[in-house]
Image 1: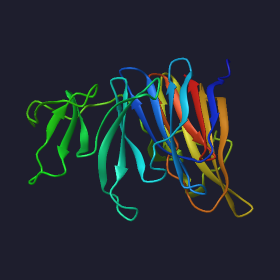
Image 2 (image 1 turned 90 degrees about the horizontal axis):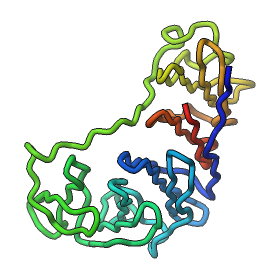
Image 3 (image 1 turned 180 degrees about the vertical axis):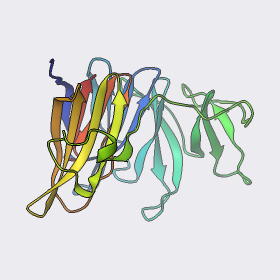
Image 4 (image 1 turned 45 degrees about the vertical axis):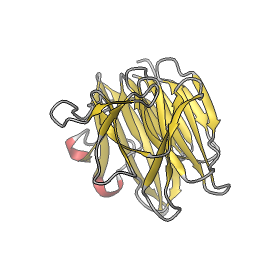
Length: 253
């Protein structure tokens, strides 16, 4: 049986905090936070061939910034209003392949992606009024319509948490701590992440199986103190996961 190999393995100087996928262009955008240096950076990858379009992209504001969304070849970034507040402010649009700024508007606040583009509102206008903008240049296109501008669906597959006995009882190489695993069945593969307890220390493992045989495995986290959330997704037959909180990995299924 053919063993799988990663086509992306990229280590960042900080923790991968957030990932967004531009489905129309197979672009993966990442937000990386280095708490020691109080520096946020951004990166972009091609999920078809593994090419890194750019990495270590930063804004003038070192820390109070993050990713909103990736859509139609553009990555939308935001600032935070205050260090102690989760509220966002402003939009900065950068090209998903070059990192070049396309436009910025510091009055707009992102709400969500619709089938017709980003829905935003002006923070200076009350009550809140949603509008649709062009992701390419930031122009207001029209007023938002709940009947027409539906939330944009995606094809990103997120694992479910299930009991071990409901998946592959007796064949996993590690006994799941708590008897629960994160699970996806996709394209003939079964993908599982689980925690194991060894010498009172938790580890998090990833296994990809076909026909009850392991065709890929990795140690996601070792010497951790508590159960970690799911660390992988599947998109367009690509398994994307985070290793040691700082390494991006991708495997073609």
